[in-house]
Length: 552
Image (cartoon, rainbow, N blue to C red; front, top):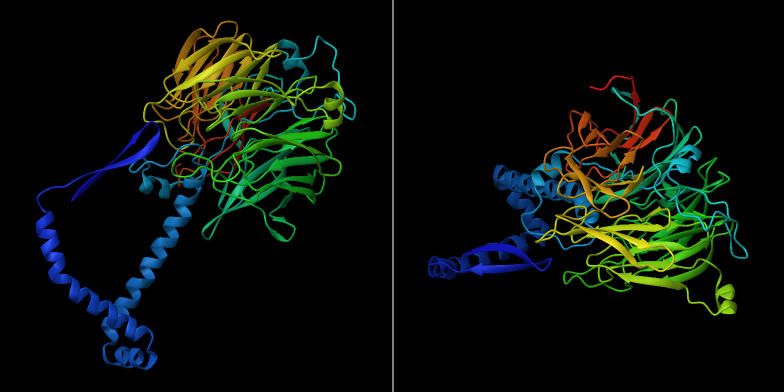
């Protein structure tokens, strides 16, 4: 009997073809079955009769040793396979796994990646050149909220200075067996980075504070309430006063994960807000509240198992849950504008962009306002972090995930009117757009799963140019964009500098450990700060690259 698997409408379907060997197999099976049953019964009898087992070992020690060795070997192989494949299976976020779509041998030989495009503190020069949305120039806040936010979730990953060229390694923070999926938060001379550490049967979490100049850890923690931290896909966010680090925990199949808060100076945990789901979404901070999405866990049929997902807000000083709004599968990371309006994508079984008011329940009730300000349907699950550009909300997604493309790959980038949710334009792509869309100088830089970085005109969504980073290797992380360069990472571990004018590749550097090439899970977006690039790698740790002035 021969079998093969295929996917239809995004889900896996197995079709079996019967060929002429079936009668022979059936006949052979009928003849062999009694012998197989007898052998199994004999083994069981030996296992449950220690004296008989001991006598057998004495009489036939060589054969028994071979059998025992084979059993131990099979167990070791099973454990190794589980450890090497589990991060891939858990990182696959919004589509069932396809038979034959993952090269497991390749996955085993290199593992690690990141998605370092989640945050970046607001930079005055960058904002002046390309400011995110603000309410008429005057920032207003609801009662109980302050208007001074923490990390700017407009995804400004360029923090001023020159565009680094002629990149060379400066330092690497490389805890053993650690994968950095999220984007580090950079505040002053401190970098806050979260990763996943390989453990028997899965992954645990690590949160560290690293010195920007040297890469030396100032503190690191791997425990929460005496228990190992759950792994991190979420990126850390730092409050405006620099006192607290807030981050979600869990990979896609994890349950009962929490939004966590740590003391930025010491790494001590301050509070945890538990959810029945996982928090792969990265928190956005507005004043003294943190807003984040808790994503759904889908079954083999693509439907949510249990809670379909929700967005929630927490009061940072004390960890009090302020409100909770049902939204299907909000794996996207939110953006918050100057009025406190939250914008987030809805993924599997949602396919929408949602605007959510962040004010307290009492305030909304007094004003007779719903928490949902508007909801705009989309053609695809909206999975990418949301970007704000002037009065536009830029959202993106597609029918693929971090591990698989869809059977018929499709992607989309949408520009919506911030006040009403009206679609201003939308551009289709040949595959999903999963990383953050960067905005600079009237251009949008879109990372596409088919291996391209595509530049769009901000005003109309028209394609300006297309460029490949590393052949057909997917680009899953968002870009960092300076005035003349866009820095993009391919999932096989290459960082490329592209000319923003025409997409020409100016230079390219390999990020992973040369002795442990990547598995295709490089997900971290680069950040540009003080003439350097900070980026997470799959097998090379958290890396800092220095520009020497000359492109290579």
